[in-house]
Length: 459
Ligand SMILES: Cc1ncc(COP(=O)(O)O)c(C=O)c1O
Image 1 (cartoon, rainbow, N blue to C red):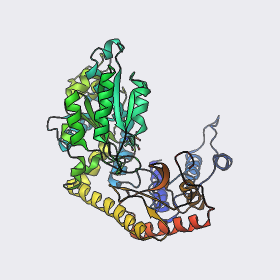
Image 2: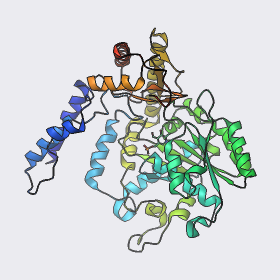
Image 3: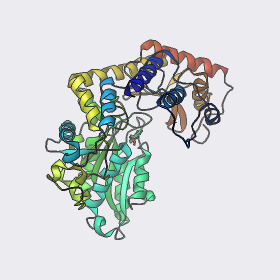
Image 4: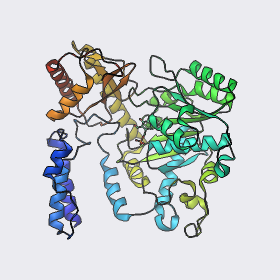
């Protein structure tokens, strides 16, 4: 059966090279054309593979070189191969007894990643996504500010959360789930470069202290979702230190830059933080999901998450049983694929990959800057390039490109309007492909009617 599976996988890889990323198809059309209903009687292997082939034909190709829509695109093939093996091995990463060397692999990774963050004694654990990594960081922060919280719940204090106006929505969602309350999140103003304004942070904290609230956690972003901007970590850390607030750094997008000798400077001051989200499934090209929460003081994880489960944690120490420091019980093996990719690329390969990604962003920015009809919003901070066509709707441009099967690209809020966002995380994209995308944007925009001045309420 696996042979058929690999044949199908090869077809997919070939299609990624030759076809469009997948034109927009409505769910109604898919329901009509695909046989998705669950049968009463089982079908033969051949029949199921034939059905899967049809599903793949309608599936967006995120590794196609004309897919620019998300903060992930393309794949490190070695990681894809290890992911296939992980699926077959079907381990759960809670105990050494059932995951063996994969626990040791995870140790290697989190120790190394924490050391790269600037914490030689640090550690962490893999979690299902950057939002969850932010959740864990915020739980640790909450329990530090309110040590009774884990056992007894809140005791009426107002614990405040701070992030920049450009921070990720998971922070607000997490605040709602953790008993902070969504309205206790201060969306601190950002500056013209999209970075948190440290004076505005200081001011917000001052106001909250005066009102009797506790500044609990500042979530700084290393690579904001739309603009790719980096908050000034060192200055924010000083503010946190002064107010004894926890500093969590959301590096879901830009965290991997610590692997580059020069680009690491974007995260200057990271070593002063308490916890750090790092998604290897975004810019590093590891298949989803591959996220780590890293902490300066690794003992805090078990202190805050351990429960007695004598049916499970029977042999070995907590150290070898990472289930004692995670939110989940059963846990996917997300470490193996990153480890395999790292073995193949080495530190140097990661740095070269970053060079290629930022060079692509710079190439696109230069072309856009010279373009007579398209406006570049700002020089790229890392791997996202924001641009617009004056008087035209960015949303409609994206939609038409998608419908025509030309490219998949998204838009996001930039200051008070919506602009196109080109993400250059797939290092296999060529200059020709970027040129072609820009030409297609121009062509599509020219055919669209004029749009009222774009604002955040009118896309
Ligand atoms: C800055 C930032 N943080 C966190 C996340 C959430 O990551 P995930 O999708 O892995 O939950 C994202 C996702 O785009 C992000 O851009």
